[in-house]
Length: 221
Ligand SMILES: Cc1cc2nc3c(=O)[nH]c(=O)nc-3n(C[C@H](O)[C@H](O)[C@H](O)COP(=O)(O)O)c2cc1C
Image (cartoon, rainbow, N blue to C red):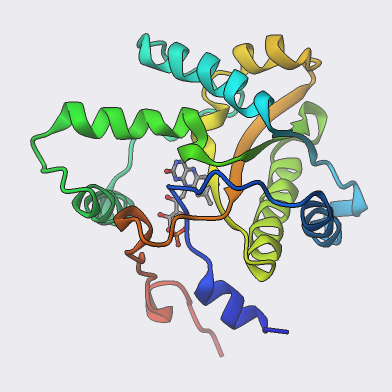
């Protein structure tokens, strides 16, 4: 059994998968672990829709077509309008790493856009789940779901299952709501694609950086 530090060090956002499904018992074990997530007043606001098999392709085709048609994102929770300062810098570095791994140059916007659209095909993952939170719990419901997302992707990693959190999958909640008949009071927050990653693919072979503690902690006393 590995510790939290090893699991965090081993996990990365996987953007290319093998077409090999994860056994149902493994998925259940990951979900049971994530269920141990704490939440404010123990409300456990997360609910998920988990797709496997043909359901993945059906949704992927619908979302990919919608996104490729140039539809504007209308997420239930607004995406950041802009990134400034260190956030802009950090975002840029991880974008450069991603596109460099694929040999896509700075000026090759069409190629970069094509790659970004792969979000909507879940990067070829055999499973994808969508997380909703109830409108009434507001931002703290979303915070609790964030903890759940983290625990789920770490639990997956401990089972040798690769994953990626995808806010992109919350871009078109109307499409999702119609597809799944989801009540309007449940807000789409994020998706997670998961499966067994293609570890030989260059897109899975770079690692992102983290800021040093002095950029994060204001020690007092
Ligand atoms: C809440 C959340 C949403 C994310 N959404 C996307 C996404 O839509 N598409 C994508 O390619 N990566 C997405 N990511 C992955 C981040 O880009 C990635 O976690 C970050 O660059 C750090 O890299 P690492 O996960 O490999 O350590 C998301 C991550 C989080 C935590």
